[in-house]
Image (cartoon, rainbow, N blue to C red; front, side, top):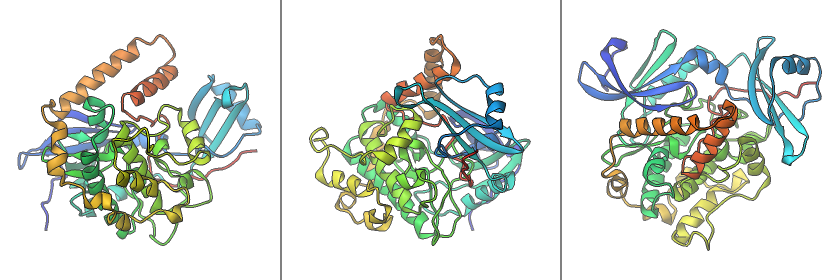
Amino acid sequence: MGKIYSLNPNDYMLLEEVGFGASATVYRAIYLPSNEEVAVKCLDLDRCGSNLLVSLFAGCWDGGDVEDLIVNLFEWRSIECRRFIWRHCLFLYVKFEAHGSDCSEYSIAEVDEEFGSVDDIRREAQTMTLIDHPNIIKAYCSFVVDCNLWVVMPFMAEGSCLHLMKIAYPEGFEESAIGSILKETLKALEYLHRHGLIHRDVKAGNILMDSNGEVKLADFGVSACLFDRGDRQRSRNTFVGTPCWMAPEVLQPGTGYDFKADIWSFGITALELAHGHAPFSKYPPMKVLLMTIQNAPPGLDYDRDKKFSKSFKEMVAMCLVKDQTKRPTAEKLLKHPFFKNAKPPELSVKKLFADLPPLWKRVKDLQVKDAAQLALKKMPSAEQEAISQIGHSRKGQSKWNVIDLSIPFFAHVHKLK
């Protein structure tokens, strides 16, 4: 039987902030009864309800009484995303200029009230405690403190691959390190898929590393819940993920998706680790979604990416096939020659963070730097946010959580008349 952790918040001393997201903040903490270093994810339950994912592909809106209501409530700029409550339902309203023209498109989505409750969040946190794999972050325990859900987890001292790229590797990692990181991540996905679970948000920001080179798949500070508890024999219809990493079938309502959506995201993550940013990361989220559906799959260029092996390029191409039925399973992908030749992570990954300051100091320095950059911008906050995202993506930070595409609850899309 594993160690039992206290459900008393007074037994945890919160220290520095080491991660944050739309609804949560992650702290390095000390578990006082054993003087053990842990991570505590503090999830704001009040904010979760307002950060639910909703689809952006409900089509153009023809107008009506609801339009009059919205126009009276908000002032719109050329690109804008707003949430609002109407008749006890949560909606997302989007207005943007299509292809540089004066035409504005509107997307509306309604969130089913049956899902997204605090009880759902608690159940998902409890599910996290049952996960048992060396390459997956599990929860030691979870409990509610005032309006926050605290989830206690192992502390990964080197943070995420995304954070490391932003700090020291803006052009991406060397292939040897990429191979080690991806192999450990794929082991985690194989375990989840074998147990009927879909991660649905695989990306560099959710791949964590420890000081000894260990690699673990997680979901730090983005969503309330890590995994979908759906039947492995059924396909999902929930629109969940982060735009740059989302599979085409996830973006198209009614088509359904399964474990193969994780394989697509895994392939995008491989490109992210190779280049320092995800494909299409310089574009606004709405355009990313359209490009993912309409464009040919991204990949490693056989001429431009000469430093990468043929085996690596072939592996990525296998993952990024639009027809999900033709993508390999995680189990099959682990047998690919690229992973058979991968070095142990303690040999290749450990070198990545040698001589770097501690994680909490890196996070603090980046927050100060980001705040200073935004302070120089003399324009409305929404435009500041857009510029900040573009700037970060060019430096290796794929930061497309403008609209929160991460809470794994059901969202039903409607075209309002």
